[in-house]
Length: 225
Image (cartoon, rainbow, N blue to C red; front, side, top):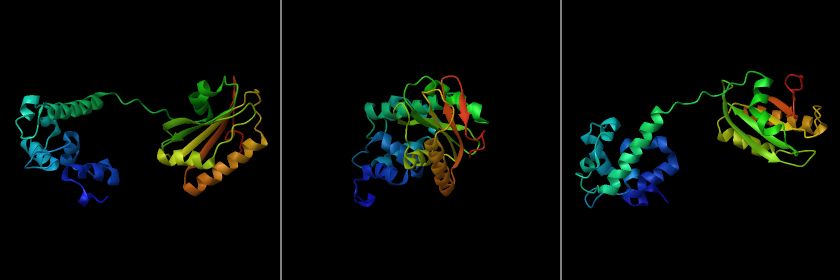
């Protein structure tokens, strides 16, 4: 449904869904938190009035009490608490320490990331490390779980995940429960397919790691990429 056909109070939500959170103004974000306006003003208009009263400062708004917010027509205790709670979440997020992302500089770094997940399994699993353009780890995930001898990955599934995480590089890995570090013909073929697909999407395959209980094999180190 087009935004213009929606009730006034529903339009910011629809805009969020159609264009994303960054497209919303401050008043539209606040309107979503409030949910509705009053009989004279829709949610966006009421939100704009509230923000204007604090010079459009989220910091100043966070200093208002429930009673302060309830002075605005259409703001009851429930809405006031919702506004204050949302601002408190923002405050706590701001003061949390952002953990430093792991940087992958070589095959051993990649092995260290996945060793605990893959070294002691009785069946094969296929995992991927997604990296940004500084080789910092964005995301790590299991893609498939197979039998004793092989775990086949869907190349489309792999690159959909890479695109979802806006990664520019990937490292793939799987384990050999048998303990053999020698890549199979299937391992070599799937690596080739993944590399070719990545070239098309400008997402670089940096390595393929085979993990055993106490060691690993790197396609990159072996010159197989």
